Image (cartoon, rainbow, N blue to C red):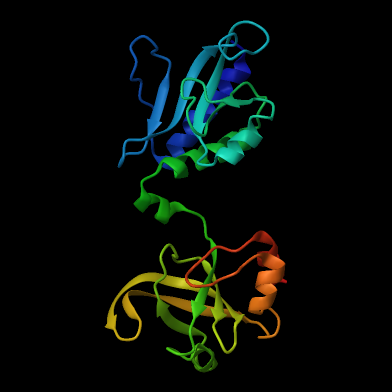
Length: 252
């Protein structure tokens, strides 16, 4: 076996141990070299390292090659990646969105690490996914009928807001102010989330978050008509993600 195979395989093992605190398991007596890496809480695998013959992978040449099986959580991404050199449909785990990544140097080390991170996130428990996911951008609605958000931001750059499902600290929220404004008016950073709060008025609240004003937009710029015609957003009834094109426009 070529030294490059062994070296990259060892780097992946060390990376998983250092970043996720997970050591390999060897569950099969007949395949003592196979290594499984799993989450401690839900026991799901996020990586499986194997030493497989090139013939079984339908690759040219003879001998064995080290691979790591990873789950992507995205079938479209899988279909795109398996067009690239060194990334194959999942061997041994063919169902769904698993891939097998060759550890022979045909896929760059950082790419392997990045795909391992995707697999770690895709197989994590819901609670862990919410905790480890990277920051996201959201549009959230504000109804002037219930709360004068414009007046609130004139008084303070940090306000409390109803905790929206899926939103967490570090996320960016763009506040869409409903009629009569009907436009995105504010860009805010979520500085704190999941704050217990018990309120049963016009809008019931069990948790709130703190949001800090970062930027204010002209109410004539990102109107509902613009959101609909240019960005395909036809309703803002609750927290929702935003397309990349709108994100870029809001950031300018």
